[in-house]
Image: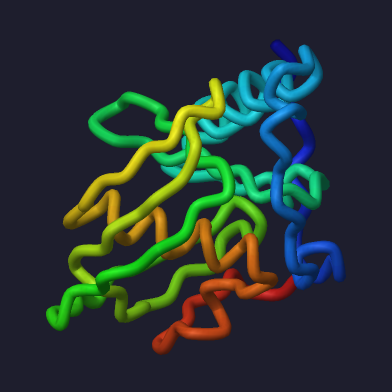
Amino acid sequence: MALREIVTRPSAFLRKKSAPVKRRYLKVHESQELIDDMIDTMVQKDGIGLAAPQIGKNLNIIIALDDKNPMVFINPKLYRFSWGKVEVEEGCLSIPGVWGKVKRHNAVSVVAWNRKGKRIRMRVKGMLSVILQHEVDHLNGILFTDKAKDIIEPPKI
């Protein structure tokens, strides 16, 4: 496995909408290597989520950490959003040193494929729900700073 370079703001690549993944692509070694690299990169960078656009790939693939177990979501679609919301302080590997408070749904349902192309559907709550919403935003070219309030940025030198 290889660590991938994280694309950081202000790269215009982070604002692009990602393309759906075709099921046949998952049978190609390159796709599995990409997923392994995404997991390794996220873990090495102390992240809890990573979207393919953050490593320069315009694909609908995200990794989310659930109790220290990385989960793969390909072509994720979120639906059935909870009425209840939670305000969470978020950061992002693509915007190092910046933090802000974002309101997210406390629970969402997600349908996606796993890395083998098998359809998965689940209801998630709490932090995993927040991570999925953050990463799906990346797939749509949205950064957490677009939604955050009380943004804290490192001092400019």
